Image (cartoon, rainbow, N blue to C red; front, side, top):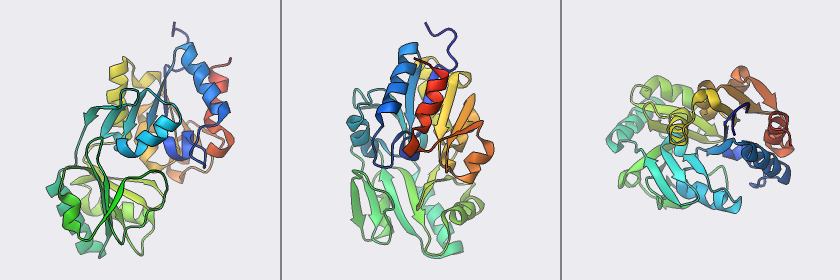
Length: 270
């Protein structure tokens, strides 16, 4: 049934890629995805959001497949509302990384995503929430409170550095302890070393009996770069971060202009 398909796995980032600026999926994109899946392709959402944060959006758009969440830390069955895999960031390592960064850069605002389907995002009062959505956020007064339970990742912000500058500094200072990525405005993250969207997508693909050579990937931010490097074909959205535009196999229209649909309609004509 899938013989002759250009790609058997369609991997899409969520925010800034699949979702419109209003956090919906357009009718045109829904139709293009339906045509691709009817032809035999599988759609997998790959997002930096943790599963509790992604779940309301996935439910709203009617997505019931496998979603790679939390930058690859979680593989989530959206239809069954069940975590299939989950990886945590060692809290001692996270605390050490944060301390080393503050010794080098000065005080940082920080937040942490707790592990599990009921995990909250704990944030210091100084941490600025740059994006919306139904985020289970709880403010805390001390950094120690961020580490009371297992976490999947740590968010950091600096009062004077840009996101790119902070990410570069974090890689230089603590890149031997943690992974570092930039997922969007105000969202620099510290992850388990070696974790990325690519590692999570590879796990999901194996469960589906698919491989990198079967995959087309869509994204817009530096956290999508490992997924781009893993997939057979990569597509950056118009206005994507320069790091993605520099390596993408092609550039499509923005998420506000049905960029995902434009490519899928060409590859999987109805």
